[in-house]
Amino acid sequence: MPSYCNAVHVLMIPYPGAGHILPHMDLTHQLLRRGFTVTVMVTPRNLHYLHPLISLHSSSTLQTLLLPFPSHSSIPHGVENMQDLDISFVPDFAAALSKLHDPIVNWFKTHVSPPVAIVSDMLLSSWTPSLASNLGIPNVCFVITNAHAVCSWWVNDLNSMPDCYKKLHLGCIQSWGLVFNSFDEIDDIKLNLIKEKLTKHDRLWAVGPLLPIERGPMGQDDQVIQWLDSCHKVDKSVVYVGFGTQITPSKLQMEAVASALEQSGVCFIWVVKEPNVVPPGFEDRVAGRGVVIKGWAPQVAILGHPAVGSYLSHCSWNPALEGILAEVLLLAWPMQADHFHNATLLVDELGVAVRVCEGLETVPDATKLARTLSDSLAMNKPERVRAMKLRKTALDAIGEGGSSYKALDDFVERLSSLGVRNKREM
Image 1 (cartoon, rainbow, N blue to C red):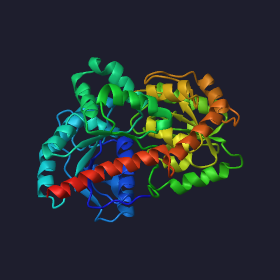
Image 2 (cartoon, one colour):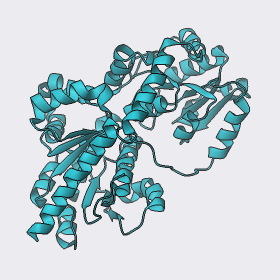
Image 3 (cartoon, one colour):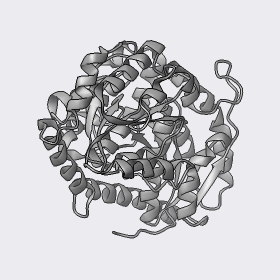
Image 4 (cartoon, rainbow, N blue to C red):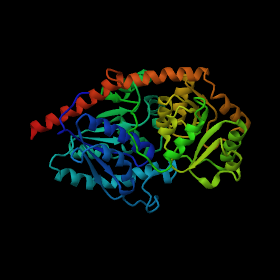
């Protein structure tokens, strides 16, 4: 792995949602491994996301810019993360964080070695490009999803978007560069379309799938893994069910999933965000073959266990990549945002996943879902075979000499050249 001068300093500004902060930290980890100095801007209640990075890297190369979360009329006091609210609050969080423009400028002006670039989440692109412009440095937009999804938005939907969303997408397109948590082998056509039709430059880098950094033990890890160990008489015999930190299924949806799990007879782990909506008596009836985790779960560790064979998911891009890398069959239930585009890519175009339901408010037929859960554990399913091939392709992409490895190196070289130029101008 090439090593670059650690005088190259980058400011990372992640969006305050677990599904955005975590891949941002994974990208930060890769830059730190290549010798960069990185400052991560974060608010107090999101600081814990940085702890795994802090434990791995020196304080001389990994720094934090801790700023208070600005008040906003629509965001309840004390809330600093999107997982506590629904997707309609996306522009409100961006608007709130835009109030940190002046504190960031003040920090930049007093820093002995200020950053040569900003890498900011695409959902903050309504204001971070202008921040970077005011500082005289480029803004790189980090797109946590794939080019298939954003290309569809930018080509087909941009003019019909509400102004707040249109502004952030235009800010992303007009940024100096874009980094995608994806890989050329599935995204090269759309990446080229974005280059030719939208950005009109070649500073686009597909560097994924970004491997999750080790998050460390968090309470019930050992207990869950021990339970999976007890199930591991047959590989791929457990279904994992989880809809992320942003989705809160309705009572009817929870009842349908519970009924399907009960009817299917499969061993399972079900992660629920709101524990009080688990149907009464369900856990007693499935005791021994099912585990309900209420709250946070060690998802990467669970998916990576050889006992886990399939994953019922909302098809957000990060969990989808985790499932592919873990050799589990994705059962897609797209609900909002990029989920539908991801499902189209994985189910319809690549044939590596199975669509089981669709829509944020749709209630699946429990009997049909039970049959799908049971069938999903078959090792000879065509989707599973193709998914295993895609996993190899993804791992080859991030391996030395692979497309994503080379893209990350090129991204690092471009940022390094900015640092060299700045030193010459001093």
